[in-house]
Amino acid sequence: MKKSYVPLYPYSFEEAQRSGDIDLYKQSHNENIACAQAIKKALADNFDGYHLKPGTEKQIIEDFGFDRTMYVLANTIQHFNYDGRISIYNKDWADTIFIPDNNNHRNADFLIDSPGLVNMFAADVRDRYRELDLWNETHCIPANNLDFENKIMVLNPMGIKDEYKKPDYQLFYAQSGFGCSPTARGRQVYGRFLADGEYTHFERSRFLGQLKPGLVPDWAKEKVMEFEKPSIKKQLAEIPKQPEQKPKNIDKGAR
Image (cartoon, rainbow, N blue to C red; front, side, top):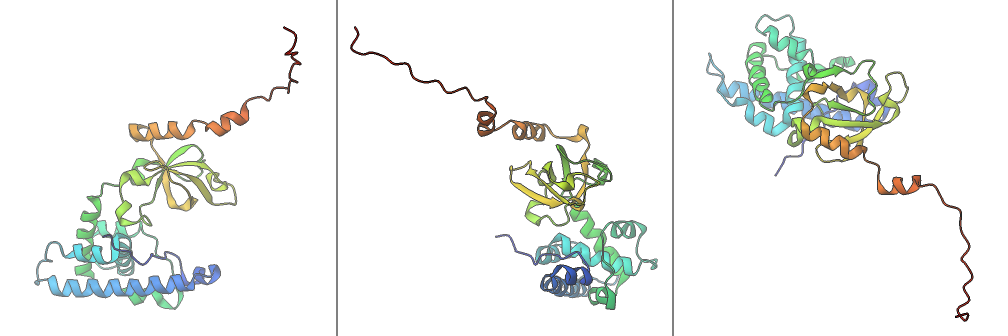
């Protein structure tokens, strides 16, 4: 049975106040703290003074999910960006994860004060994440100034449930919504998951970009063709109406 994780709230406390999402923010913040404490304990229990026991990251990911585990690690690495014990590779990776600048030092609540161990642990988490073989920015035409309509877009895997963190479930066929336009005020993009046809919507900012045409799988092309076929209802609606004809009078007795 798949574990149900507390949703990660990726915005600031101030944004939560403006949006009326304080409860969501608090739940997520408390879970961030719990995750950081669990990582601290795992590092203390599995470091022999030289090496971190292989597989230490597995239980943390199972308990808190990829998104929160990486969010907490990125928060710590960004905080200790000056520390030479953290590799440039982990620093560059951490910078790809947006951590809002919370006032009153709320981000400090889930810092892990062992930069050297965090560096090793983050490398192991990243290795396990790479095994998912997800689409990333290198596979995409950047979303900036791009019109999304009728294009196969790639969802940022951050925010997708772990059981759906698969390349197929990142592909989204954008069909409508003001968010398709890079200049419109509206931000919602409506369309369908190519994997199962589910119709839904996302904020424009949730997309990494358009999947490069040369990388589009054949199955995805077939799905797009299915979605573009007009429905029977639409086809009937487009048939020109014929003028109503009066029935001819037939004299049944004249034979």
